[in-house]
Image (cartoon, rainbow, N blue to C red; front, side, top):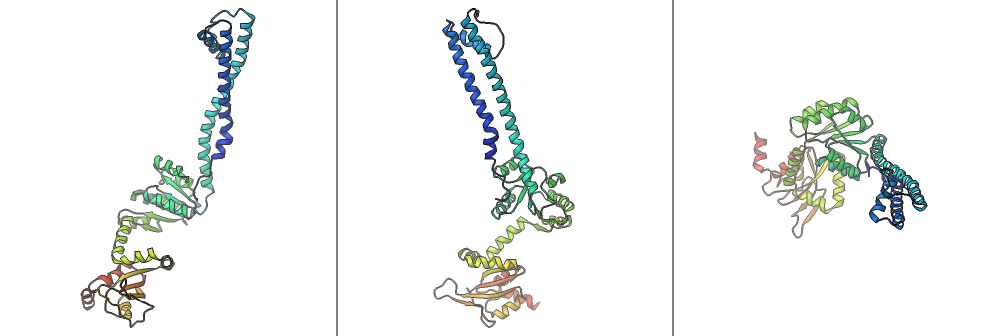
Length: 369
């Protein structure tokens, strides 16, 4: 996926494997030596407690004195061997512990350095400012599209969440120019600032625009009054989620059949996407019995719309037995009640939908005034 951090599994095995194995091996060695030396002193007639205590003092080189006099060749030989092997084992054990702790910290630093290296390799990428609800969905969509991107998130918790998902993420304030530079704003193609904070989005837009005049900036706005401020700050496009949500609900009210059509036909969905690339849209509207355009011919309806829509198909008595589809209807074909009218729309889809749903008297009185 674009934006993913490369797998660090090999680093764990190659770098940390040897010190961890050395630590375990040394612990086993010291443990075996401790047991054998203790048994050796017990063989000389010492108790378990005295023998274990003597071995402990000898291995750690504390030098508190001998538990019992070392006055035989056997005890002196055993003590000498325990001193040499025990001190050597403790030196190796201390070194292994230091090595493991150091490499764990180094691995953490290497993870950060590797992420920054991957970010620096990005070019023509997308910068997402904010990893909230919109940021998460945006990152998922860009990842599915295999588009390179990096996230800037001020919350350390959310930034760690993004990193855990394998995404390139910088924990910091997107309002800070240094953070934007770390994200490669000078090489980025698009910056999307989707914070739920209008003031922050305006400031980020200003900073990003000053750092990269060619950057395409898409900004989120909460209040409608923020839209102009974002444009003045340098945003190329402004998205108002609340406005979009309300518009989408209205579209579902005006075009309830469009959802079914797109859901049931992948071919129609593909055509709709192709038309959207041309600035057009494909919608299905039901002609109500008392609608303003019901009873008019296709030619009259299109003239009423002043070119806002074109009728490309009429499903007569849609959903009923014996339903008839009229493709490319001529100008003289009449729009009848309960017809499902397939439209190619340009301009406001809401205005076109309103033409079909508003009462006929309303539009006539408007024309007469």
